[in-house]
Image (cartoon, rainbow, N blue to C red; front, side, top):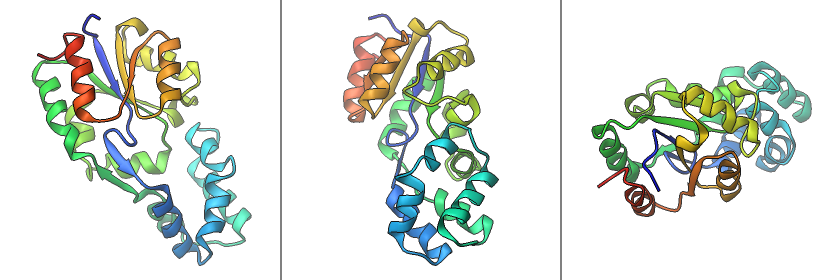
Length: 205
């Protein structure tokens, strides 16, 4: 396969690792309720998905949380508790450095919400600013992977045809959808496997 003109990386469990259970525990502590209640209200309902799709604002997410849990925790404390769930995947940084040195255009294509993205992009994780020029974020696009519309918008943001984009994501359903959208996509299972995929396409030596 030919080297691509643009490379999109998924964010969660590719560039940064995350733990939703940690978020649920922290939110439960702030709200003074059981962790299982938070899990059911946020992650087993449609609330998180609506927030990631941009169907509701951060304030509307908070108000829905309050209504469904019968609590009213501090707004900023709850958002921080929900967002402080990330750790950088240090193993991928050398690969990003190599791609940057070869002048490849890089972007992030992620299902995320406003509070998570603000937490990640406020300087805590320099990886976001240091390597990437485009951010295709579900809450801004109003479309989330694996919806085909998300990939179409991502290609428009990159300014290249879908066939000229390489994409990696830890979720196979998102990878398969990317392929249907015309991307060259592989599932992320580790840095060395990804490196080999890029080498086979002539993107790396």
